[in-house]
Image (cartoon, rainbow, N blue to C red; front, top):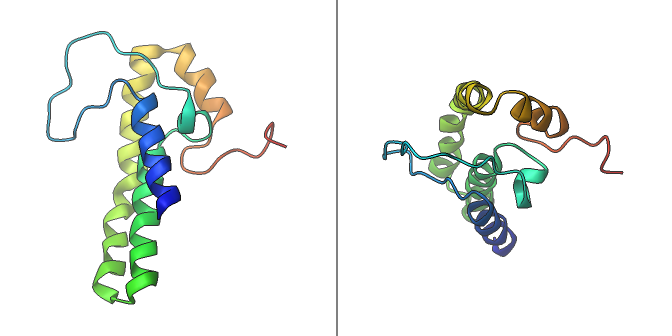
Length: 112
């Protein structure tokens, strides 16, 4: 769980554009986050959420917690919509970044 906390902290440190989902995005110029955990995956916060729920389920054995994973079934759709917006904003820069990183899991090519 401690490692998960470190992962999430690094994710938020490297995403200077973080906007909570219930807030409207500001009209400022944004910077594409590509460092820290974003160097390996494009959606590190989503991965952290999935592992958090799995960890709590395994630690407690409470099935109601495990069913929280069902909510994450919408993540691929959410991620694709976010990436569509990022391609519109950053164009070829984002396309190049996306070609080097995995959406939810790191790409192994180039890491070995």
